[in-house]
Image (cartoon, rainbow, N blue to C red; front, side):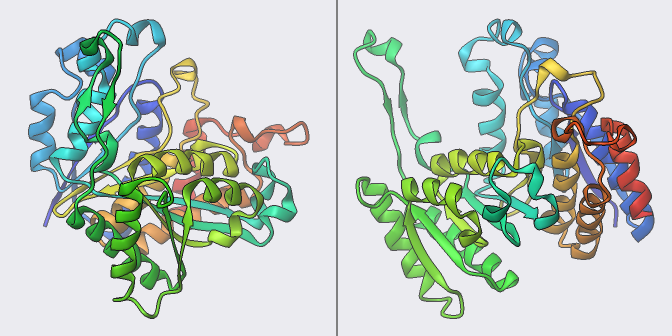
Length: 363
């Protein structure tokens, strides 16, 4: 049966790295004899200027009929973004509505850095040790990002409010997803919270620990978010396994984890709901390097691996992509952000050359 994949290329480097992700998608499709119909639709800041809306109705229709979605990063140069009204900015009027529309409450972000690639990280090699392998799972449709908001302009700049609210069901469903992932991987789970200060933190911790009783085979511990930020820098390997985080804390710590890896270009992600999901790089649109064929497409290609794994349940296809990605780096090839004076010129890859090499390994 043919599957439909909606492709939202986004802005900046989005179209370039998405093109490499589609190359890999096509290679896997051919190798494993799948049947996919890829449909492109506008999304992001560019869509606002061309369509009057960063998430146009025709894009919603394409996404509604799709079995899964590939989304590129969004955002243009500052002078262009300043021309977009606050209520139409893509962060507010495209990304959050996309998450809400499909209730993509689980966000998977892998933090993987094998020992052979320790030089990518700003941390010392002895801190990286035998390698980092953390699956960060962030709750994506609750908390302060989706709570009621009172803008300062409405209070004559006297105060502003961001409501942070979580229901039992919201916490419980993402906790089950995290424990299931830990069970599948046979690894420990670390629950991150702010229970010493926040009522929502104490609530989150209590619900997660209630769910933990259903998983006696999973090693469990909890940690305050500020201590987690500190510990990630001094010994990230202690978190090898699954980390569970609420929305805002997850937003911050997953970016910190990208810094540990040396680049957000090494951070693919999958946003999964009850009926469908979308995959996307965790980084921004980097408009300053758009069109230069130098962006690292790893995060988009890794997101395509997630498409096969988390959206379609095709683990072998996903593993094929991951193996190809790490083979490229393992053979000494680098994109520009990882180039050092000792890097041979013939090992420096453009965006398109990186994608071509991944495809050649897969096929």
